[in-house]
Image 1: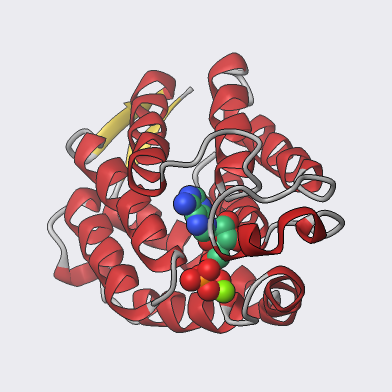
Image 2: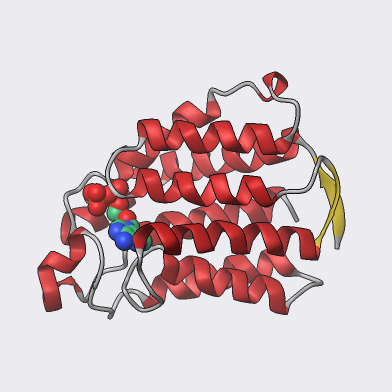
Length: 204
Ligand code: ADP
Ligand code: MG
């Protein structure tokens, strides 16, 4: 699996994610209404609309574009998700090679760096009912399926998202609810699934 890394391709990923976030704003808000403060849809739409307004032509390479997208999310999203998505993209960007051919190992390294960044920043672990419960299985499936890595990652993210439903939250606002946080999917795991699904449509 080798493809070309270009700023246009990375921007296509971000545009696809922005479209999916807009299409799912009500769902993300409703999930966060049930176990948080009903702002995840609005937070992500605000952030991703600002990212979608970046002009890919202004950036020398995918790394610079991704860094700007990360800083835009940190500046615009607010809430827990802004710094977490910002860190994900910032670390992922720093691990990207120069524009040109990128193979399975190259994407794997970038994805691991990004997800490790979320873990460092949020101090959550698998099973805490956070975005990591979609992202960690996605990266694992990406590594295990070099021939169909993005599709496998998208399917694993969605399975991870579904697995958050019965979980009790141990991090973030939902953890204030204790046992009452069980029974609804984690909003951040749901938006993270959209991110990986958008990657599967644009980067595969
Ligand atoms: P806030 O919780 O500040 O209102 P959002 O509603 O935008 O922010 O985002 C909530 C999502 O952020 C949660 O559903 C969860 O996935 C994610 N999240 C919160 N805290 C953490 C953390 N410590 N580590 C990883 N993800 C987290
Ligand atoms: Mg919230």
